[in-house]
Amino acid sequence: MTARTVMVLGTTSGAGKSWLATALCRWYARQGLKVAPFKAQNMSNNARVVPGLRGAPGEIGSAQYFQALAARTVPDVRMNPVLLKPEHDTGSQVIVMGEVRDDLRAIPWRERSEALWPHARQALDALRASHDVVVIEGAGSPAEINLHSSDYVNMRTARHADAACLLVTDIDRGGAFAHLYGTHQLLPADERALIRGFVLNRFRGDASLLAPGPEQLQALTGVPTVGVLPMWRGHGLPEEDGVFDDAPSGAGVPGVQRVAVVAYPRLSNLDEFQPLRGAPGVRLSWARHPRDLDGVDWVILPGSKHTRADLRWLRTQGLADAIVAHARAGRRVLGICGGLQMLGAAVCDPDGIEGEPVAREPGLGLLDLDTTFDHRKLLSETPAHFVADAVKSGPWSALQGLTVHGYEIHHGRTRLTQASGPTTAVLHDPRGQALGWQQGPVLGLYLHGLFEDATAMRALLGQDAPVLDHVMDGLADFIDHHMAPGALRRLLDAR
Image (cartoon, rainbow, N blue to C red; front, side, top):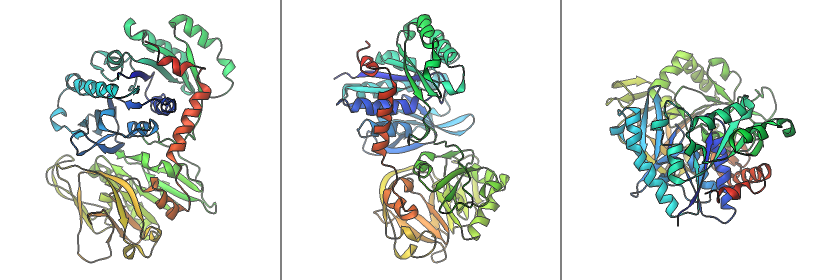
């Protein structure tokens, strides 16, 4: 079996590649085909734990995780063989086939690309050998002429797979026809030949007003416009980087829970909050300044790729004091992974995992916990149980006795600073290891995915999380309606 390949390219970052690739995965899967997603290299701090190649768990970008679910297949590390997780403006953690590769971190960009391409090529070939269709997502733009010679994520992958490529642009930004034409013309002739259709994404208004633009563009390039996709903000799929728009405040509205997610610079795994974004009676917003916490019901400290730096940022912004005041007023504070580590008494980094070694850096002091970083990275998908006796009172009491499913992905090891005190372990994995601690209105968890668990959503908010499978079907229905008749089938025969 050698799979046919369909690739989604974009004129820019944020054009809509990820969600369109997800929709294509479900659309082709509904045709009875065995489908897999693929992205040669992703750059994102949103990651999921999946099966690795040697039995141990690995990690891939969240976008490919959701694309695999859309394809009705089990996610694995081959679907995103290279993941770069930014740690600062000029450096990233390099993950190859699900495993951290410190030896590749210091290699210059172009040389590193040449070292990474064989891993990506082998993963793609393996997926093609066992599937009918592989839906490939590109990265950024394929026409960055300063990077073209070392870019293996876009056209090198397309050429290797002989992929039928769609080029998508965000028409809401303006300049869509120029973006499509310019991208097409900057590609070499053999790569232009792989572009089989243009897609206009996020269109508002009357599509008839686009004429004669698509016709003129086809006359210039030979490529038809095969889809005009209306603006659709409520599709229910997490954005590529977990980003959401600030919602109306909801202040003073009966029954509305105002939830503020602290937006520190290296925040991660924001996709896990998508169920809150779409939940009736919840207003989700960013918090970047102390005033953003005024009147909110919950404060969430999400994951962080650089806990120490983001903790210092909280203090610089004045948010550290505001979060402590919020907790002392008896209002809920939830810290997840890096957010949990910040809530403790101290963060210790003797080996300099996050920069210069430091013996002890003070945390927010809302939980009696110390966290110590070491080189081992813990990856796990696991159920976990909230101890009934430990969560029997306070704002988190609805969680008592519940078993929830989620995942861990972190370096730090956390422990109680005193054997008995106001901070208690309330969440355990099947081996009895503590994954969560509570003190009054403050709850810290190492487990990601609380709001993706239907049991937890019902307990905390009295409603179910959206069924992800229904979201995927909605995406497939949407492109089926708005793409040109027969266009998606023709892509499979485009060779």
